Length: 441
Ligand code: GFB
Image (cartoon, rainbow, N blue to C red; front, side):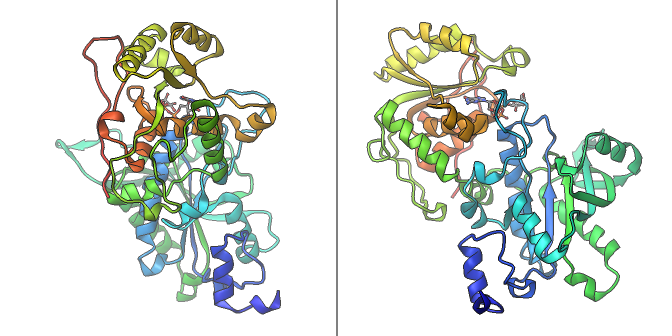
């Protein structure tokens, strides 16, 4: 309403209440959007959900730091719509172009870094940048590529270099529209060899801004940049407190939390109270602890699918996996295993037989309505959440799906011994284990 026009407090309150897209009644100068810099990014299509979560952390830590610079005070990181991922096999579900709000609680993410879901970005563009225009103008697009030779005289140096555009831009055009979003138009496309951490991106952006800026008034314009193949960028400092803050801010969407909690209660007779797991309402209120007990079940994350072929040397057979889990169940005097897996229905049947004296629990949507609501990605998140609350967890060697469960349990305050466990190829053999990366507060 008219009362809100010009009132900074009212507009700010609305934004805080997440009434987005931003109300047209708030002029851009009131919202401080003059000079906004939008950073779009994307990840190579072959990368899975859980590596993408890690790439988000690299970008979020970078953007949060960047915000401290005067030129970038209004920087916003635009969350790339989830394309249909290679592992999302279910037919008949709408699984392309999913919003981050489907998986994550955006208000939690925003309390760490200034992020926008893609639709929110479009709304801001339409209201303030490009009223009525169907196309969104991206000033520079950078496709990041690795150097062919990483070491110089045996030394790894942070560096980047723009290379001849041709082979790179041709490749990107044949791959379809930028970020699979038809409305994005890139004015200048660059092929960049990039080696180093996210901090180095600031230099890349500043160079591009300097090329565009013709006068002081330009600094007030809204600008959009796109970083493609952002998985090329490394963490500034992997595993430090900034990494963990960004990681802790990645709370899952409330709906997925609810489904997981309902399932834990109904199928595993576990509540937060009985599992002695306390999760404060806001991630900022979490404190270091190691006293979580977990529900009366063991969780096994058994990665199958492409791992069976591509990681044959380290991925156990179904029989070997079942033997290892049964040994653990006996050792901990437990009878129930919750199995998180991308196994086929046939493999699942085989596993049920292998566990005949034990109770094997597996999550599947209770109806087609729920399947359509959660989609494959949501079902996987529920699996991860149920594993996060287990008394004991064992995961798959070198699976990022497993790593994210380790992290969740670190945040919830489980002992390291109950968390950082890895399946071996065979029972009893000495085998490679996943690294232990404890939480830093
Ligand atoms: O998440 P992700 O990158 O982990 O990819 P990895 C595996 C995907 O498979 C998940 C499904 O995102 C899920 O869609 N999936 C795996 C599961 N385990 C489970 C599970 O327990 N429950 C459910 N519901 N779904 C990477 C791959 O896999 O490994 C790369 O993304 C590549 O393409 C690399 O193959 C070697 O790290 O396990």
